[in-house]
Length: 332
Image 1 (cartoon, helix red, strand yellow):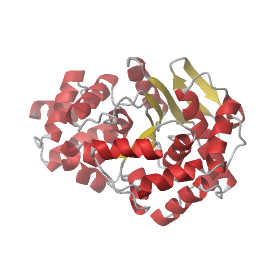
Image 2 (cartoon, rainbow, N blue to C red; image 1 turned 90 degrees about the horizontal axis):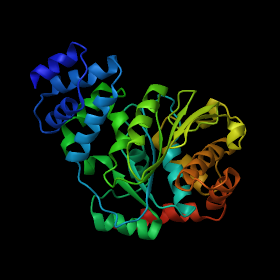
Image 3 (cartoon, one colour; image 1 turned 30 degrees about the horizontal axis):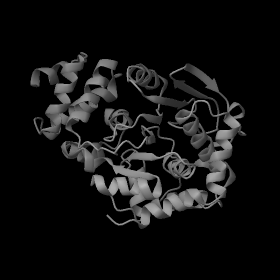
């Protein structure tokens, strides 16, 4: 294993099976903290290959606590994080709008590492009790149409890596892996990534998955979600397209209108304001754009205007807020 580590430090690339072996070794405590930091640093200094990403993904799924949602056609909507854009919790807010619009959601999330407020950070602040009990997760889906999978509870082997990622305070290849390793293995996903190279790596790997509908999003402003500040690259089973805010059915917004604030409390208030229909227009429109794209991912025959209308109705009718309140009020 030290030989593989030396090869990485020498900027050699690994095959799929070698990459899997490295991550399995990290998860089992086979590397000390300095060696794990070295592995993470290598991939901050050079691009990851598709074989390495696939091997790391397979190792994470092998090590995780798998979740059976009893056939519910749930969808994950998340971003890799690590885009450095300091937005509010767009994917998390959108998840409740999607659930309120009738599409079940299995949201995979974690604390912020390279940002102030990750999805788990804001949901824990708002009072959500995290659980890896399958019965609890199924109850959440049944009652709220959404369940929340807090990543550390499902990837216990990675507890050794977590403190090192936190100390580094920068995006690592674990940001790239997060959306790929939802332990419920949903057949539907809208995922945002922080650069075009990673978008194409995701596209290649996702095209290989059977019975899987997806949309990969990279906003050209550097966001790992639709920001409406400019054009966005979309990759799905039909190919690649570039769409402007007007193509998506919205006006362009400015970057300062969708920032997340400097505290978790501010981020939490933004989430609840949007879900209660009293959010700022720019923030609400960004959530609607992401939710509508997710609804079209789940139902490709759904027209753009109909998807937007469903997302808007989810907020206006109170269904999105009801989904949120129900999730928080359920006891484990």
